[in-house]
Length: 488
Image: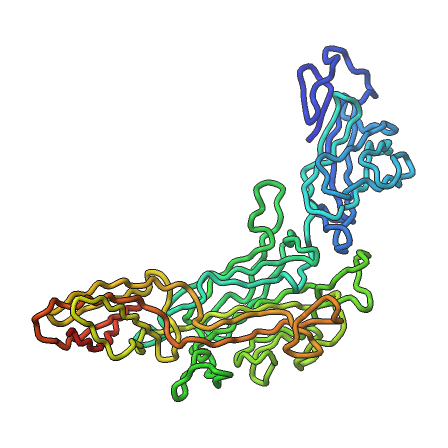
């Protein structure tokens, strides 16, 4: 934005108080923003202090007379509007200015009519503008400049999909074609969203996903609600099926089938740094400070937290034609990664209802119905799954209360930080290093499908054995399960 002295004119700073006065050649008549450079590159974003990325910006304005001639030796006052904490002028220019750390400086224009002030980013996120003034009525402003997180770190890097459970097996010829949106979120070591557009790479154990996606960059306008995020579409149509794995711990299984046979690993990886606890706030890792150690990214098909031959790995840290595990050193420049999981479930071929069912005269009895697929997994959530009930026989009554399935795996799956030098031990700040591990805990084998309230008949009639048919429909495919109740 620019400002000029003219009759009724304006531009960035208002009008000349003596707008009707004629301007002599050589008098300042216009000031305009010329450039904002980080090094030699035009920039609208600076890295947060100690990020190592574009922490300095040179903001230039040019002053001209009424004939458009650049003017030298003109004092230009620079001010910061709404600067984030710590963002300031360096004030170290030979031709004028304030002391380092100033919120305003005065710089003289050079032979080209240009005055340049250097800004250093601060320690918090924000958006600021540089205002340049020749006088109260001759002013201009720079475009907005963002101070943002720029280097992804591996503590806050996450990948989450809208649905954990997809009914890919609910088809006569699986996989059933289903889609799922997955979002990667990039966070820097200061827990700020990464405002620089960054390439996120992706790989899956089964199904298909784009090989890479760009994260959303900071913009000077708008809410920046998706800053540092990128969303891609996962499809079940692709590599099929997920790897057949052996059960672990008390994982439910029947023959060769277990819950994790339908579990798909989704990997995201990006250039970044390993997170660390900057205890002395000097912006760099020091010996003894806890950090999160990572090896090269890999798709953990068998869920054992270790790369095994045959599993995909990204040969990037370093590129040496072999898999490199965590190296016990803090890495400033490396490839960081995270994983999430999608469960492939099917139709509800298994059920569980407590037996025997006896309904005394004039008494209410509640019966709970539980279901699972061949692998003891729950069905897909929401409208994808419905339950029904039918009672055969005239004695007594029945009222059904079907359950609405919530999204989930049917077992507990957590990705948490652990002591790198004592596997299984918790991570804490006193340890030299920690690692990410995925842990499984298995519980009930069946998902609750709802309850049935059975009401006994009146006295004086013969007891009657009736069929109770519990139906479970997944994406339109219904499986009925029949049990029997004695109505006394």
